[in-house]
Image (tube, rainbow, N blue to C red; front, side, top):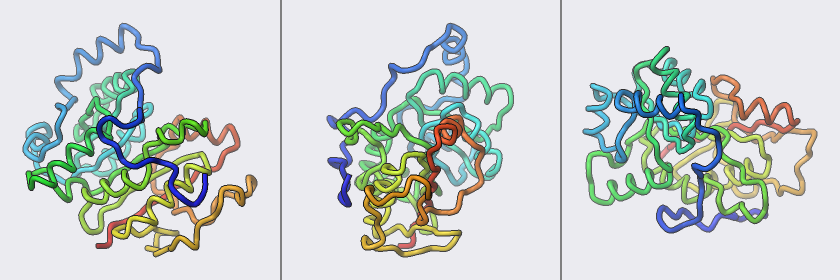
Length: 265
């Protein structure tokens, strides 16, 4: 990876595979959970404003959680923001089933799940913006992507979710003051994420809780990364539990990088 974004651009249709349904074992109990609990907790294929209001039974600010893992971070985020509604987007069926089971047993009530590829979801929102429909700009107060698939092999880098075009579409959906939170345990992916944020002029990266406008000259080449020294340009870690994927990264000796950027114009 160089100081240019390795991704070929945001391709909501006909582009490279970003996510997959094939990994993970589905037990009969999880299949039954999906069938029984989806009517209560799952959303349809579109996220228009009126449909979300109907699903949650209210109109409230919305948070978009991309990828749920084992679900504890999603549920904690919703519990910490009871005045917001959380939409959790995931394609991994076992993860969805576990989250549905936990929501049914423990709540909170302000979560709904969407079985979909987030690139397609954001593409739909981009079209809504173009047509001026209700789910247009400022659809989400915040968008969070914790530990997306790193696709560590060089030939797979183009499959990574977070690139410049992804960040641009997210910025379209944020109001002034809205924010995006990215986290990864792969240093080269952290650099790719940071570059994508830096190149979006509507966003400004937070450092230690302050808005810090940084330029391309602040970038660090991957070859200059000290494996024993975590990035000094990361944001302060927002409140969140240690996820399963994060714990695996820590166990493997990798650094955790959080990047938070707010929309300032």
